[in-house]
Length: 573
Image (cartoon, rainbow, N blue to C red):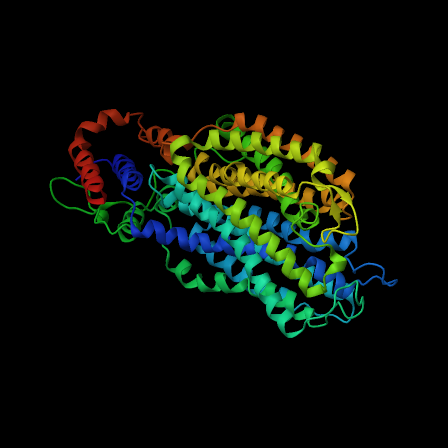
């Protein structure tokens, strides 16, 4: 039996984490990806399905009194509907990120899911006697929907990083985030399917043929059904989320319960790490009182030491995520305004209200299928081979280049306005436009949109990991809010000059992201404890009150610690 409690706990903790880091990929790793990933699937569905139905809301609730053009949402209403969920997400990332470090990842995980399910259903039930009251109710529930979504960002990333092994950690976290791509894809598919079913039953003339009849009143059910279906995948994974044990790293490093950490790891990885022969440490002998925990922290989040150790890291993760989301969410929220210019969406006056939902959703689906989703999975397969830094740096640079090209050649690529083309533009190059626009999405996802999510889950100490990820993610959503409430004002009218200027400005934003990436270190191939500096804290806490160094006790504990560590690694591997 190990004679020193402090040394026992240090040795045991290192052995547990060594086992996690060297474990072979197992069924539970994939199960965790699916459970955490379905949250992100739901997040993306809920945030981006609104893109498919905002034009429908304009036709139904804000028709043109003169009947000269299809109804459209006023700019402030459009920005509120598309952006209010992002405001909620920002608040949720900060709150649930902090709560995840206080109460534990698992305890908070179920709260976020219940919030998402309830508010997704309530969004579709938004009622009122006037357009203003319907929009106000919708915005209220979408804010709280975003609040629940926000909690999923830090919790899912941190849970996956703390469960994953060292060799494939980046790919596992990226796989969770890649479910966002499928969420966008399915949002387009669901909107296409629902609108097509209603079109079969309730077809109507185009706006050109009949301004009044083109806005089918049954369209009011279309947008509600599309929004409410976002509750289904979240509800389906609730049970499995509640069955997940707390991560061993939180249990050992934050709560200080080393025995429970070992037991939880043994359950999820199907490994028996307890032993009682040959001087090995038994789980029952491990103290649940930590040598340090949240009551006895070496330094706090707002301390000078944290600033010295991780201040530049946090600056790097927040600025790069902010700059990325300014561009990424502006592109996603305004893509409905770019589709016609790219030649993939008919002119609004040539469609009825529900048909427009179908065409916007189809365009959204195609962009996701051929550009967004492949980018995510390129990251999954390559991030542990070429590293986070290279992918983020290259992604920002290529996004900047492609946006600059599209912006500089916007008028030539789009063509001139005409009445003979179904898209409303003639003489352009829609194929080249669509390819360049798609490549921008591809390198966003095979680039900073993935890495800005992954790196904050690896850089920081366990007791701050969820909080710092939440801060980084909230900075990103602040960028998304800038895109939704400010930049989007320049694109909703379809003014070619303004759209061109926005694209060039976003190219400059991406180049700033390229520069700020140099503040973020590479994390590939190292353990979370090495990256965050927690391993140095173990060593510091190996010294007792009389100033005896851990090295002086090592001889007494050597046989036990070595045998125990070998036992853990051999069992897992």
